Length: 318
Image 1 (cartoon, rainbow, N blue to C red):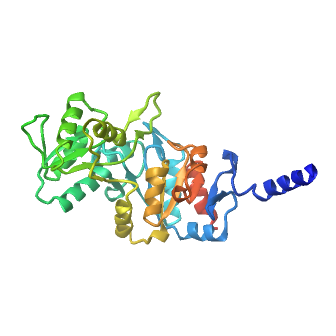
Image 2 (tube, rainbow, N blue to C red):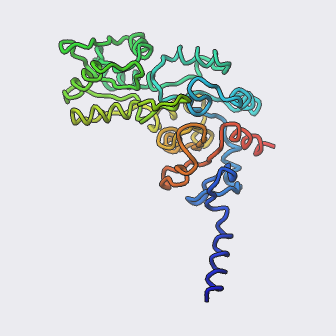
Image 3 (cartoon, rainbow, N blue to C red):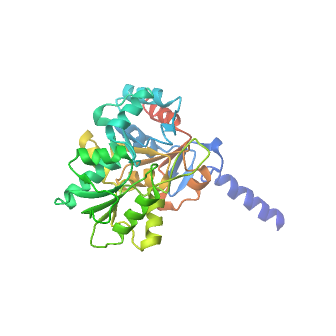
C-alpha cells in the first residue's frame, strides 16, 4: 500500500513538473490554463509573434533608481530591428514629460517626444474631460509635476485655508511637507470637492536602502485621517492610458504587450486592456509573489528581465 501511494505521488509530481515551476531557473514562465509552465505552447508563440507594440514601465523595468540596466538599450534596438514600436508608460508623476524625456536621453535611452506617457498627463486629460470648469487645483506633488499642470492652464492653490480648490489632486511626492499633507487632507475632507489620485502604487522602486512611500500609501494616510478615499485613481491598472496608446500606434490589444515589474499596476493594466501582460523580476515583484497571485491577476509571461523577453520575441520570429 505504501509503495502504491509512493508511486502515485511520484507519477503526479513528474506529470506536473512543468505546471508549477518554483525557481528562477525555470524562467521564462508562460500562463497556460491558469497555471505556469516553462513550455511555450503554439498559442503562446502566436501571441508573441503578433506583438507590434511594447509599452514599458520605467523604474524597476528599464532602470532601478538612477541605474540603467545594461541590457535596456540593446533590447530597444532589437525591438526596432524586429519592427516593433515601443513607448514608456510610468505611474510615477514626479516629473513632467519633458523632464522624463531629458532623464532618459541623459541615460542614453532613445526616446522621442511621442514615446513618453505619464499619469500626470493622464490626470490633466481626465480633469479637463470630467471637470471642464475646474481651474484651481490643490496639487500634492513635486514642483516638476505642478509645472506641467500649470503649463496645461491650471492654477496651483497655496497651502492656505482661504485658497479653495476646484479639484484636489494627490500624487507621489518626494518633496512632501507635513503642512501640505495636512492641507490636502483638509480639502479631501470636503466631499463636495472632487478628489483625484494620480496612481495607486504603494511604494516606488529604488536601489537605495530605504522605502519610498508612494501615492497609494499617502492616500491611505489621508483616508485614515479624514475617512475619504479618492473618487478616481488614474494610471495603471486602469486600461485607459494603454488603450489610448494602442489607438495612437494603430495596434489592437492582440498586437500589444505591457511590460513591468508590478502585478497590480503594470501587468493588471495590460490584462485589463486585453493585451499581453509581461512581468519582469527586476523591481518590486518576486517570483514567489507572482506564483502565489490569484488567477485573474497572473501575468501572461514571467521573465527574469526585459532582455529575456526580447530573446523570446526574437525566437518566435526566426
